[in-house]
Length: 126
Image 1 (spheres, one colour):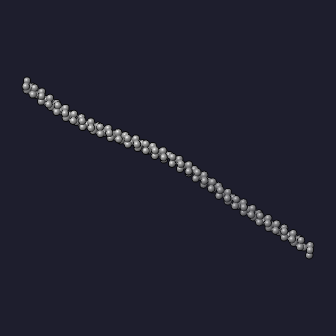
Image 2 (cartoon, one colour):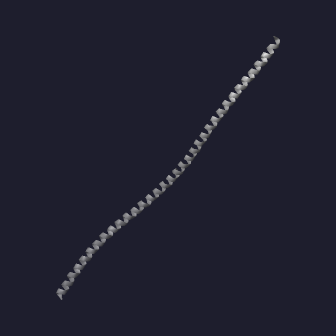
């Protein structure tokens, strides 16, 4: 009976020692789990902040992209307007040259008429 009690005590001590060892392992695993959860939380926070930054950058990109497209359209319209104005200026210079030529011919004709009248006035008196 003493031997049985001694065996039971020894088994109890072994079980307690195994229990203490398992408790220590459980504590270590719990610390690791807590560290991993904290890391996961920080990674989730990092992911969230990165997503917010990307969203803001996407919004800025779209704003500047739309602005650039608008400015490009305005620039193209200005270039088209400039080409049209250059064409109109060429046409106006051509018309001015034609009218200047007509005016020169008309002045020459008028001068010829004045010269003819002056010759006619000078002839009867001779």
